[in-house]
Amino acid sequence: AMNVVFAVKQYISKMIEDSGPGMKVLLMDKETTGIVSMVYTQSEILQKEVYLFERIDSQNREIMKHLKAICFLRPTKENVDYMIQELRRPKYTIYFIYFSNVISKSDVKSLAEADEQEVVAEVQEFYGDYIAVNPHLFSLNILGCCQGRNWDPAQLSRTTQGLTALLLSLKKCPMIRYQLSSEAAKRLAECVKQVITKEYELFEFRRTEVPPLLLILDRCDDAITPLLNQWTYQAMVHELLGINNNRIDLSRVPGISKDLREVVLSAENDEFYANNMYLNFAEIGSNIKNLMEDFQKKKPKEQQKLESIADMKAFVENYPQFKKMSGTVSKHVTVVGELSRLVSERNLLEVSEVEQELACQNDHSSALQNVKRILQNPKVTEFDAARLVMLYALHYERHSSNSLPGLMMDLRNKGVSDKYRKLVSAVVEYGGKRVRGSDLFSPKDAVAITKQFLKGLKGVENVYTQHQPFLHETLDHLIKGRLKENLYPYLGPSTLRDRPQDIIVFVIGGATYEEALTVYNLNRTTPGVRIVLGGTTVHNTKSFLEEVLASGLHSRSKESSQVTSRSASRR
Image (cartoon, rainbow, N blue to C red; front, side, top):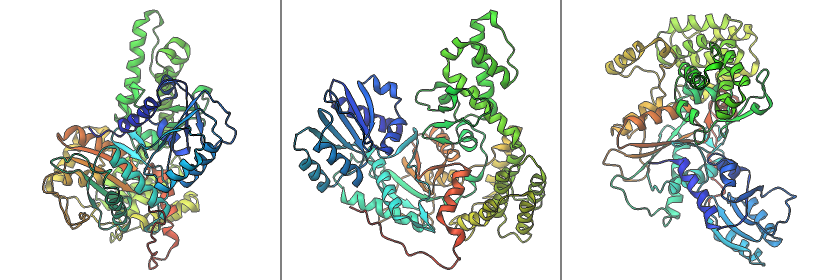
């Protein structure tokens, strides 16, 4: 299967193996530190005789001639310069240098010239140049990739590198399709193609019967998905607490203990998380409860009723051996407890129900009434109030009874800050009707409507999860060979005759955990099809609004458009 976590893991374990037995130091930069930490814990790497982790840019590293150095670095100019300084006065006995992407011949030559003491054993390219989030989800941790509708040149270069590295690490030489309505998507498609052509020897993989497909999309085609509250575990944690390279900051949680100020949620070494990351919030609470009750059964004399989150917390504190036995559980009890607190404090069940109505239904007067009602509720934060008005503005942008001005007044009267009120028009500018290449809201046909209806019957809790990202429909069409070529053309003359099997989807402007869940489910239910999703970043609502701000669209008059600049850093 196409598994990005496994791909990066393999590179790192190969680096360590290739350096042979003995004590080692792992020398990294800021980005590769993140890349490694996503797939290996420090203790796992310690077991491989790597006893020291250092940053290439840290000034005061000790000389340790008994250590071998494994260097894993992005091929940037700064890193090459650091490496040259290092080799002129080597601190370690021997160096194994791995760049996470293509390195130029002239850079290799400069390193060789600096290596007067002949300490370099090898210089190689290992293409772990992206953040592996889930087995089928990767990110480049880039926030704000475009200026207006066009690429920021530095980010285009970084994204091209990240995407070509991903293809090399999965051994795929794909055909490319892109979203025609997006200039940025076409530009990235061309840049990726340029690298494949230039580095054709690297891309000579064993031909598969059906060639892989890279589909490049733009976030502005679906600005609804990143604006919604989430109810599956991973997505919800990111939306309400924020996940940053698998780390969650809990320092603001009332009464948090020292060891839980920052927790790591990684499916690689947390069985509970692996089993629960895609489940609904309600199920997770009961799964934690079951876990604790199982533990209690082993210790009958310590029966204790577990009715509430508070009970669970008390239980964990009272039984240190329980904490040891399942350190992960105490962590999840804390995380779930905090999510519960925020849901009730911010009235999120009510808010989410109206969000879902705005995203999925087409009844304008009901939607308007409900938004107005929620805006009156003092428990609803300015953030959630603004989010509802954004969803309304996107859905009913051209409706004959559009009441956006009234809602903007309601936001003002509620005391919502200028920043959030301005963002409403910025979001419409970013992802409104004028920009979208596809129809985000129309009920597609009778079959689709019936499906929607049946889904609605499945149970009340689904009122919060009716929404399917637009990506679901795009991939469904793609898998069935029905994705329209006039909307998603191929780059170059050739087209795919068969239905695609290996699909890499990349979203410029960021993907979401809700979309990752869609991909996870499609992978599970569609035999013979393997999909990997990537984005310039993985958004929650907060970071998506930062992305919109960074694009600077709100401050520009509609007419002016930027000249597309060429990326200066093409090799």
